[in-house]
Image (cartoon, rainbow, N blue to C red; front, side, top):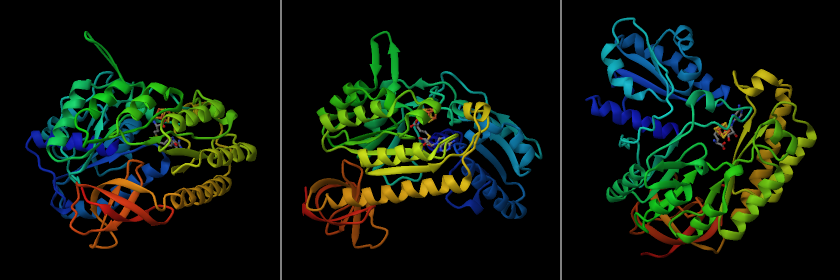
Length: 430
Ligand code: SAH
Ligand code: SF4
């Protein structure tokens, strides 16, 4: 999501005659887009700001701005604490940037952090600036109002709002015409995408269908679905279109009923497993990935065992695994105590990581001898002679280059694997 936002910022500033540079020592303004989701994300930014002081000593006119969630969360306090920050801009105020850069002189400090109920940057065509030219993100909605007890997003990104579907379809079409072959539709909870206008209502399954119809050669992915809203309608639409990728990211957060309630997730483990069953029924080939938090407030050993059990039952293909980090202002910060000792959080996280590593390896071993259509994304980091791409399930496959080029589809048979990568051979070149 942050990456998509940086592309919007680049577009707004490019239109105002600023240029993006890849060489930081050439920059007059340094904009740092930030995340506030866990404390360590914020600590990394503070470290980076400190490192940038050396550069600022040599180029004293350089101004540093902090964009995004950390700016929104800390407001002006951030500029008081970090003396080399000249301006801060929250996620809904990026249109103000050109004016701010014009007005910023000398030691003056500027802040724009007003949240909006309507801003979706729908009319802004993002500049794809660090792009492989093949895969791109399209932001389809902003904000979140689910108020999970641990999460800072509703406070830093504001109310949920959906973007005009026509602008989304147009953006997908333009990307396809420029040679892109995959788009990922982004939102904090894409299942609650809803656009109402005189002609009726567009919900997420219909939006997916419309984007998929841009071309059968354009793959469509999405993230993230909240389990409470994952509908059979969406699964049916996914089954109907070959180019809608068969991969669902369904963050579970915990396998314990008590924890899920305390987290305000609005589902039980039973409900979650029912959704997994529905995915397996409609989309037998679908891969499933998740997010999980170890050591949320009051989590007991039994709750943790429930999470491990959930992982054994679902057998995720991939998981983003986090240690709970208390965030100021959230429900947890106001009403609960961060009472799981850090060593215990770490140990539980390590147990989840070890289990997931084993499951991912076993899942990948089952892929051996299967054949997949792969969209080639680039040259393998390990060898110039190899390419890599992804199958519909979002698994990375590496194979010998031959005459193939990034951006093409090819068919690959899996011959070997690690827990993270499949290795294969091309069986047919379309
Ligand atoms: N909207 C998405 C997730 C957005 S944040 C969803 O609801 O699924 C990405 C992930 O960060 C979350 O799924 C959660 O696992 C993790 N996360 C959020 N707040 C956290 C916190 N305070 N500590 C640790 N992990 C957190
Ligand atoms: Fe945060 Fe929950 Fe919203 Fe996801 S759904 S962004 S975890 S509040």
